[in-house]
Image 1 (cartoon, rainbow, N blue to C red):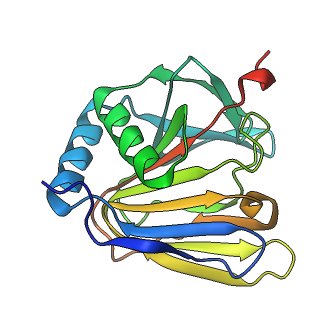
Image 2 (spheres, rainbow, N blue to C red):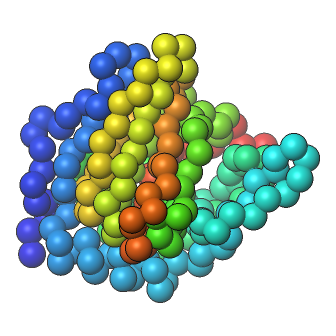
Amino acid sequence: MNLFSQLLDPPINLLPRDGEANYHGVVLNADVADYFLACLLINIEWKSDEAIIFNKKVITKRKVAWYASQPFDYTYSKITRSALPWTSELLDLKNRVETISGETFNSCLLNLYHSGDDGMSWHSDSEKQLKQNGAIASVSLGAERQFIFKHKKTKETHGSVLQHGSLLIMKGITQTHWMHRLPPMKNIHFPRINLTFRTIETNTIE
């Protein structure tokens, strides 16, 4: 099986200014992407996502998982999660992403969207534990979904459909100037897994 399929060279920057969101296209062929989707659905320790909103704990239908090279604690939406050790499939995907991107990563946050009813609201990945202006590599498996950026100052939006087996890499000052979201899509009846490979700065860990 080919390692890469429909790889865009060079990748397309989805943003006109103030950052880089480089879409590499489909980097895993259909058989490989299907394999990883099936494995991750079964082998990942999924948990319902939680957030503190207006001092109330909210549990979403979307499920999440947090894995890393060390048992890093990671806090977002006012909830702290402790990392699990890499699975063999996650290490395989990490190595593939690092080969394509030339970046290195020590952690991965996974989201499981059961159908188009599940989505993600506007946010930036700018938590203090993350490497400042570091790359975040987003791998999409399963249902193709719209992904949208919104500039924090001008409010302009730019988006793209993220394909099954595709790779998007956000880096530089992107998180400073842009928010992003995954809007619900009622016509989608299949699951999607998104993996975001990240770098935790170990000098920020107490």
